Image 1 (cartoon, rainbow, N blue to C red):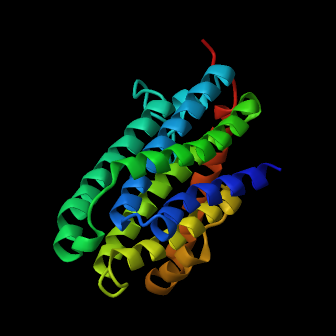
Image 2: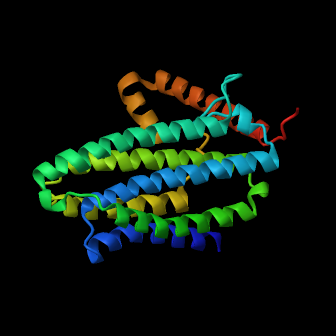
Length: 256
């Protein structure tokens, strides 16, 4: 049931800008602006999940864990603060870059596709908010029983999504003329983003394997030799073991 709700949410969210461009004659600039607003809203909702989870469970990970790996330095704040500051800084940088594209690059090369309709953005964000709030309410019902590892993986997935969207826009700008202008780029971008969101929902956040992946060890064995490849594998397994140990500690209730 949970996966069905999440799939419904992902497809619903991604259908809004696609419907706007294909059926309501939105400009590609309007749709891209809506994607940015969606990123902000998602980050805030994940931050709210983290706050509620911390308040209801008081698991040590909220004060001791870092975003990607390793322990947090003493006095460096909370996991919630690290997530929100990182997500909002990345999104702000993304917004600045996107503004240059929407208000300088596209009007100069593709004037017919230029112009952001603020009313359409607000309407689209209203519909998207319904789908995102549906997912939030579903998570909130059993949030107190969730592990810290679950909310940590969710936070990292959101940060990864922001980076993927940003890199997709950059690469799309390079090939915009080949794709037939902003509209063609938007359709490719929308398809890629939908597949990325569905992939993250169905397979994202799984624990890493205990042994290093072959894509890392094979090149090292080829260029550095078997001895260094074995040392790398041992180091990887040691770090992986430390990470698993830390995750176990993070699930304990914080002592005052």
